[in-house]
Length: 132
Image 1 (cartoon, helix red, strand yellow):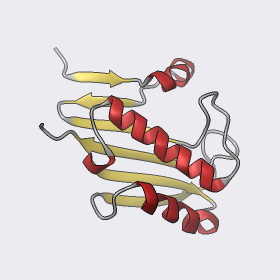
Image 2 (cartoon, rainbow, N blue to C red):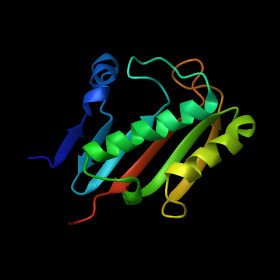
Image 3 (tube, rainbow, N blue to C red):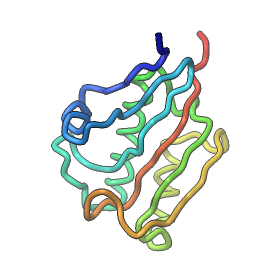
Image 4 (cartoon, one colour):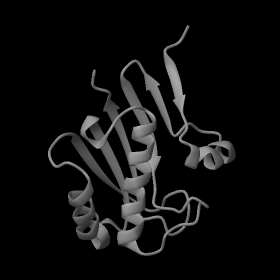
């Protein structure tokens, strides 16, 4: 028997069904989160960069919560950025407002595009659920 549990928060059921992927997979106490982007519940890309970044962090927060984790449980994070130099200051400002500083390894990668036109960032992470 596998200790792998697929995590699909209710707000992501539509994209999980459409794309055939798991927003997160829990193995033991480790939660592997697929990349989260800034779009609405109707899968529309948010055009304003700051609002898009806030939505991406909120989507990640909800995936983590569905797996019994919080931002404080994140141990490794990779962010993928379109036009990184243009938007990094805003992304960092949003990150500093919502995500704990200095608690995880973080790698930023500049890319030419993401899954849908208009997406500026995708946030992927690994979290380890703490015992209560």
